Length: 286
Image 1 (cartoon, rainbow, N blue to C red):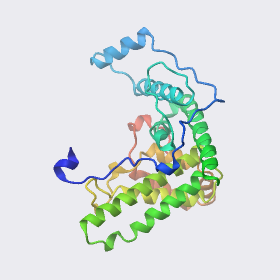
Image 2 (image 1 turned 120 degrees about the vertical axis):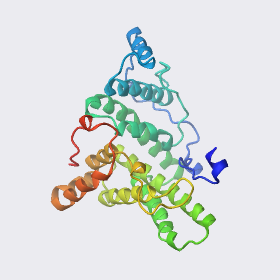
Image 3 (image 1 turned 90 degrees about the horizontal axis):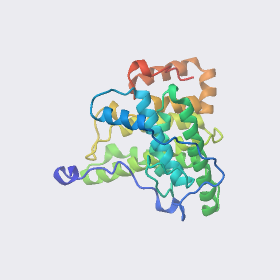
Image 4 (image 1 turned 120 degrees about the horizontal axis):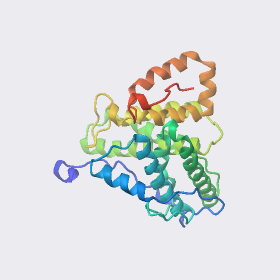
């Protein structure tokens, strides 16, 4: 409706590139399903009381229930098992369809570490299997880190000419291209971390992730640029910390460079948390 009333609006969830979609939905045949207990009568009663405003559930309980929905939907989609009706199955032909589940996993608190590992097991195997099938389809090796670097180069090339564009229409289309390429860059960088790819230029990829995130936070929905970043549009702090702690090339650099560690700790102040201060846990990058 917004685009109809106020004019054009950017597409904020780009579709997967058609050339990179698998011909058949992804299916894992060598992954043991994680048991997802069906909701008992106590669960249903608590949910009904919570919906009626009669009780308050802790954030951990709500996240655990959401985890059950996400995991059930993934296992129904990828393993053909699950079926508790808690999550909606889908036909997965490209990793972008898994991105919401990956981001949910990245944001889980330390209290749900066991649940995070269970999600990581399913998602990691799905991404590895996609990489294997896409490599066979392309007839050349596919690495998520290499894909990320390629998409960043395309976005950065357009970003360098933005200040010279005078036409509002041309600016809109250029910003959409930048948004698409940076969106795909960030997704592929995250997939490279989840699948534990060898740290090829990992430090530079994390630096590019931060650069792309700040630029994307200046792009407004109507296809114009804000003079300064919108911090509400930046990734959650938990997502950034997830990447920092698992990017092996970056971790090696942080161990050698105390100044870089201090700079990163200062930069993290600009990222909002998904949870109140008392539930965040440690925010040390290392």
